[in-house]
Amino acid sequence: MKFPWKILMAAPLFFLLPLQSLASPAYRDQLGTTHSNSHTCIGCVLVVSVIDQLAQVHNSTVEAAMERLCSYLPEKLFLKTTCYLVVYLFGRDIVKLLSADMNADVVCHTLEFCKQDAGQPLCHLYPVPKEAWKFTLEKARQIVKKSPTLKYSRSGSGICSLPFLAKICQKIKRAFENSVPFKDADSDKYSIFPTLRGYHWRGRDCNDNNKSVYPGRRPDNWDAHQDSNCNGIWGVDPKDGIPYEKKFCEGSQPRGVILLGDSAGAHFHISPEWITASQMSLNTFSDLPMALSDELDWPQLSGITGFLDSTSRIKENSIYLRLRERNRCNHRDYQNIAKNGASSQNLKQFLESLSRNQLLDHPAIVIYAMIGNDVCNGKSDPVPAMTTPEKLYSNVMETLKYLNAHLPNGSHVVFYGLPDGTFLWDNLHHRYHPLGQLNKDVTYAQMYTFLNCLQASPCHGWMSSNKTLRTLTSERAEQLSNTLKKIATREKFSNFDLFYMDFAFQEIVQEWLKRGGQPWELIEPVDGFHPNEAASRLLADLFWKRVQLQWPQVLGKENPFNPQIEQVFGDQGGH
Ligand SMILES: *[C@@H]1O[C@H](CO)[C@@H](O)[C@H](O)[C@H]1NC(C)=O
Ligand SMILES: *[C@@H]1O[C@H](CO)[C@@H](O)[C@H](O)[C@H]1NC(C)=O
Ligand SMILES: *[C@@H]1O[C@H](CO)[C@@H](O)[C@H](O)[C@H]1NC(C)=O
Ligand SMILES: *[C@@H]1O[C@H](CO)[C@@H](O)[C@H](O)[C@H]1NC(C)=O
Image (cartoon, rainbow, N blue to C red; front, top):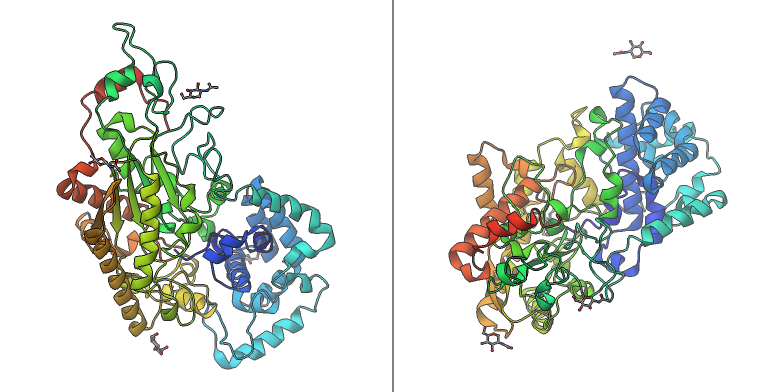
C-alpha cells in the first residue's frame, strides 16, 4: 500500500524512473516517502535479472536477450523506444558484465544505479559472499571502463540530461503529466475513457457535453427525454405515457457505492508475467500501457467497485455489481476514490475528488478502507512513523465532517478495520519470488530484506524477518482498528449512519482453504504484500454477507422491476 506507483510502474522498466521523478507532482512525493535512488536500484536489479534470465531460458547471448525484451514491449507510452534507448546507453556494459558471470546486484552497483552510502549496509537481492563483494565489484569496474554516458545514469537527473534525449523526455514527461489523477478535481469528474481516472474508477459518463448528466444523480424530470443519471433507463413507455425511470425506479431507494481506500482497494497489481523470463512472449506486455495509465491499479476488477468479470477462479461479484443486481437503477453508480499510499493522514489531499451533490444525488454507501498505510512505511525504524490512535481519531473525524457536508441524507459509512499482516511473513518468507523461481535463488525473505535495506518497502513492519517488529506492527494495527470501532459507536452524524467491520483476512483464508487453495495464493506474487483479485472478491463476499445480516438497511431493497428493466433496456448501455 505504501508502494508509490512511481516505484512500481517503473520497476520492470527502470529506464522510466528518471522520467517518473520529473513527472511526479509534489503530493505524490508526500504519499511515497522512499528515496529516489532506491527506485532506480530496484528497477535496475529487476530489469537486469530479467535480461539475464531471458538469455538463460533461450540459451541466447545477452545482446539477443535485450533485443528480445525490447521487441516484446509495446510502442505505446514510448515503452519500446525507451527500451532501445536504454540498450543503446547501457547495453554494452550490461553485456560485458553479465557475460563475465556477474549477477544483477553487481551489474547495478557497477553502473551506479545502486549505491552503498558510507556507513550504510550493502543492499542486494541475490546471495552475496560477503568477503568477495569488494573484490567482485572491483573486478566488474575493471571490465567496464568508465564510459561517458555513465555519469548520466546516476540517480537524480537521469538519462534525460543527455542533450539528445531531452526532447523525447519532454514528450514522455507530458504523457505522464496527462495521467495525473484528479487534476480536474473541480470540473467534470466523470469520463468516457477507461483509464486516467476514467470509468475504470467511476461510472462511465453518458453525455460528456453536459456536466449535469452523470451517474448517481436523481433523475431530472424522470429522465423522460434523456438519461440524466446514466443508468440506462430513460424515455417514456408508449403504452401509458409514464416515464420508465418513474415506473421502474421510483421508491426503489437507489444508491451508489464509494470507496475511500488505498492501493488494496484500488487493486494494485503487477503481472508476474512481466518479470518472468520463462513465460515472456509478444503478448506479455500488451496490457502494460493500460495498467500504467491506471497507476498500476485495476479498480475495474476490484472487490468493491469492479465491474468486469473476474479473471480469477473466484466468481463472486463485487459490491457494486451486487448493488446493481439488487436494484438495476443503481447501474454505473460507483466511485473508486482510492490511491496507492493512501492513509488516514493523506486522505484529505484527494478526498475532494469524491463527487456527490447533497441536493441532487442519491445517497451513497461509503466504504472507508485505509487498511495498511497508517502502520506501513518503509522507514528503517518504522514504529515512530506509524499513526497513533489519537491522531487517527482526529484524522477520521475530519474526514467524517467532510463527508457529512457532502453526502446526501440517508447515506451510510462503513469503516474497515486493519488486518493483521503477520500472515505475509508466515506464508511467504520461505517461498520463491517470481524472480527467483528459475534458479531458486530469491525468496520473499530476501526480497523483503532488499526492500528494507533500501528503505523502499511498502510495509517494513510486516515484511520483515524481525518477529518483534511484526508483532509491534500488528499491535498498533489492532489499536487503530479499535479506534475506528470506538468512533463508529460514539459519533453521530446527521446525513449518514456509521458502522465498523473487522478486516477478517483469516476468515477468507479459511474459505479459500475450503475451496482447495493455499494461503499464499491470496497475495500478489510480485509485491508479496497486497491482497490479490481472488482475495479482494472473497473479502467483498464476506463484507456483503455481514452487512446483509447486521445492517440490511445499508443495502436497500430488491427492486421488483429488475426483470422489466432488463427486458426493455438490455445491459443498460454497459459499463
Ligand atoms: C546453447 O548454445 C550453445 C552455443 O550456441 C550450444 O553449444 C549449447 O549446446 C546450447 N545449449 C542448449 C541446452 O541448447
Ligand atoms: C443538461 O442536463 C440537464 C439535466 O438533465 C438538463 O436539465 C439540461 O437542459 C441539459 N443541458 C443541455 C444544454 O442540454
Ligand atoms: C435525514 O433524514 C432523516 C429521516 O430519514 C431525518 O430524520 C433527518 O432529520 C434528516 N436530516 C437532515 C439533516 O435533513
Ligand atoms: C527488531 O525490531 C525491534 C522493534 O522495532 C527493534 O527494537 C529491534 O532492535 C529489532 N531487532 C533487530 C535484530 O533488528
